[in-house]
Image 1 (cartoon, rainbow, N blue to C red):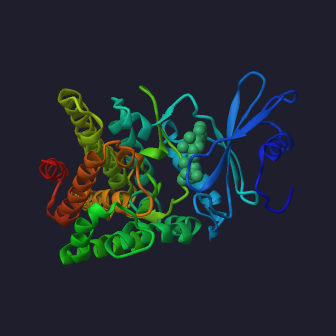
Image 2: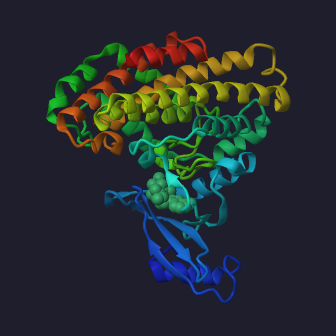
Image 3: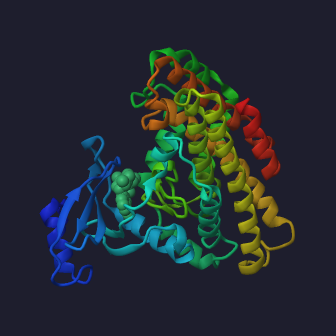
Length: 400
Ligand code: ADP
Ligand code: MG
């Protein structure tokens, strides 16, 4: 097979058989496609002993829209290489790549089917004690080892080129920073939210803050980001946390991933108002979500500073006090991007089931209004937070 072909089940099996080395030679393979994501094909290939791998293949268009939205196959190369690089420095929290083929835009991955996608678990009210710590470790480790504090300037510039990802970045630039703050055909929300949306569109201070956040997204290649660190990109159980799906990876502002993750926890916080009626149960999950954010911010800071102290290489950047200063900017960015994530997931193109699947229409609207309000306040006040604790206090204050 030389030219690219989109696989069906039989082709996926044939590909793995021809490759060899994935299963024993006498393996009898079966396969089904079950991708519930927006963009790609995801096959599970299993042998007669129930050993399995995942074969993910990019399509030359966005699956959720169809062939009218062409999309580069190069995203498969970016995703596999980001996983390999992140997996090298943080194997505990990165899904393992078994094989990658850029021509077929195919990546074979370890099967994480014994774990669950975080979003559904949070929606069901389930909690994971290690989540905040684990995500912080993944984000701190992968960003530190791909930053100017660690890489030589020459190596970093070469990696920035390798991970230049213009088409996928353009999706974020438009859906995250442009559409929610203007009339766009891609936005969607109930008519009842129109007054709130108009208010956002008229808010000049908000638009200035968005412009600043977008500029940093466009032109701050601080580290190799995951690029799409939402609750649907996290597999979890009580002891394990694994990130998948970094096809939006590029060198960008470190606060972007941190903000996306925290934004998804806060979207769930807002949604729980419409999901759990019993006050004490709702309080429990609310407390859990806030505690997870607190742990995540603290652990991220601690990890980054200790990596700087032990592994930092650039003597100019390691001057006492600069890492702390740098991290304050990262936290401010994170709070801003967190607010953007909350707004765009409520009124933009790609929503979250946390909010959209609230059954009661009025409760859903209340949760959506809260998400918009919290998002807006975080964006407006992010730059007033001069340390991690102030960021956390801001989050608490806007939720009240
Ligand atoms: P997309 O990029 O199209 O969004 P994802 O990488 O998010 O695709 O995968 C879509 C779905 O496929 C996930 O929600 C998950 O259910 C399943 N999946 C993806 N990777 C794995 C894996 N390594 N192990 C088990 N299931 C996976
Ligand atoms: Mg994806």
